[in-house]
Length: 199
Image (cartoon, rainbow, N blue to C red; front, side):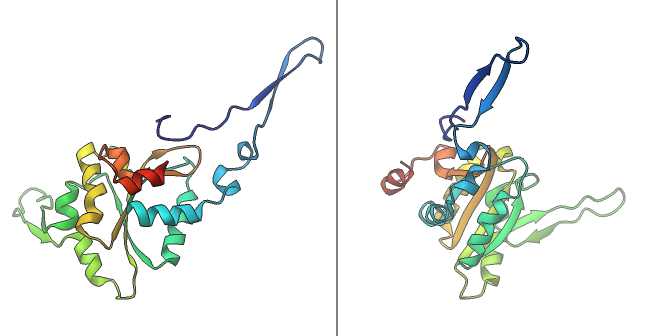
C-alpha cells in the first residue's frame, strides 16, 4: 500500500524535561495538513476531473469517517454525469450483471415453485434512460476491496466496451482522499499517455 500512495511526512518530536524531571513528549506538526484534512488544505478537484476524463476508471481510497467522497461525486454531477451506485457485495459476476442479460433466481421459500426472472444489463439500461445532453454515466462501486483481481480488471476495461461509462471503485481507506488508475491497481498495463499522467 505504501508504494501506491504518497506517505505523509513524519511530525517533528520535541522533548521537554521540565515538570519535576519527568519527560514529556510533545508533538509539533510538520505541515498544516497534519491538523486539517489534506484534501481541505490542497484543493485537488481540477486534477480529479482531469484524471476521471483521462483514465476513465479510478480506484479511490477515502478516510474511514466518510463524507469526503461526496465532494468529488458532486463535482462530477455538476459536470453533467449521471450516477449508478452499486455495492460490490452481492454483485455477483460484474460482467453478466452490468453488460449482459442476467438471470435472477429468488428464494422459493419451501413449497413455492422455483422461479427465474431475467433482468436487463444494468449499465446498458441506465445508458438508454439518460437524456441526450448528459455527459455520461459514472458507475460508483462501493466496497470494491472485496472484488477479485479479475473482477477489478473487468471494471478497469468497462469504459473501453462502453465509451460513455466512467468507473469509480472504492478500494480501501486512507488518511485523506486519494486515487489511482484502476488499471494500475488491478495489474493491467497503462497506456503511454496514462503512464506520463500518473508520474
